[in-house]
Amino acid sequence: MTTPTRTRLSPDERRTQLLDLGVRLLATRSLDELSIDVLAEEAGISRGLMYHYFGGKQGFYEAVVQHAADDLYARTAPPAEGEPLERLLASLTGYVDYVIANHTGYRSLVKGATAGNDNLRAIYETTFAALADRFFTSDPGGLVIPDTPAVRLVIHAWQAMVEDLVLTWCEDPAGLSRDDLLHVITASLPALVDTLP
Amino acid sequence: MTTPTRTRLSPDERRTQLLDLGVRLLATRSLDELSIDVLAEEAGISRGLMYHYFGGKQGFYEAVVQHAADDLYARTAPPAEGEPLERLLASLTGYVDYVIANHTGYRSLVKGATAGNDNLRAIYETTFAALADRFFTSDPGGLVIPDTPAVRLVIHAWQAMVEDLVLTWCEDPAGLSRDDLLHVITASLPALVDTLP
Image 1 (spheres, rainbow over the protein chains, first blue to last red):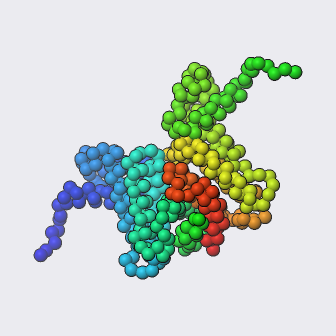
Image 2 (tube, chains in turn blue, cyan):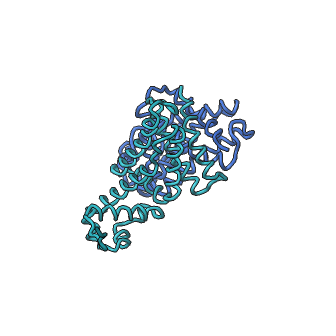
Image 3 (cartoon, chains in turn yellow, purple):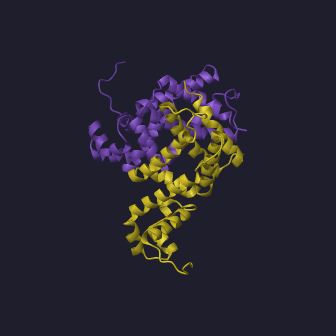
């Protein structure tokens, strides 16, 4: 069997390719700076075809944000084997490196999600809930943290803290190395859970 | 000397009175639900007079948000005397009770500040920087926390965590009492600082 020298992509494959490009462009651009026009030009296709794939400006943004969220989720997957704390550290390292590499786009996603677009907000909340769920599926024995409503409340707040910490650190590291930052993030989770009654 | 039965307020006093009313209305309303029309009707004055005092919709929102921020700052003033940790707890109690009493409006202020209006963002950032400064002016000996760039970075993130924690708790307390919540908030600050290298 030979590989064809030229492949005609299905519409779904072409759409995915465009979304990959959109997410790559977001690494160094805000969501406001990524328009259908910018992506059409970068991809070398017409605006009309972009509208065909995404059905309009809002559909385009939501598709890019969902694709970025899926990307973040995939890149923070913990390894299948290992101690709970090691797997947690590996997952958090994936998160920190993702935000460092994409902080302009990431910051604008947070802004877009907070700013009142309900669909972007839902993608954001669903992604962070899925990231939080990993603490319990990765550690079903509750070795690191037990699964209770109060712990879930604290983890939600801890995620807000980690997001702020990494984004602020990207602007000014305040003398902390990436490893120092990872240590603060990893050690703060059990420290916070320990403050619960 | 007798008290006049009717006082003619100066324009500044009248404006302050209108802002007080605006902040009170925000306790149970979002910023989107508080229009110049709503405030004019509640205050029993004309729309035209509202425009005279605030110079338009944007000026009105900024004045209300600044007034709410000043109110928050005043209500979280630590007592002049006492041990650093007691004064910190008193200040944090003021913050938690303020958010509990005003969470609809508070949530919308956070949203407005994040959503990309630079003036609202500046009011929000300035207020939280002033609240953080209190940790160091209240505790010049560094008994609770030392004043370093890394500690300032962590406190910024801790503030994001506390904000998320209190707002989420208002929606669903997850079995935690107000005192439990205050304990988590107060104990988490030194616990977080302890994770720094």
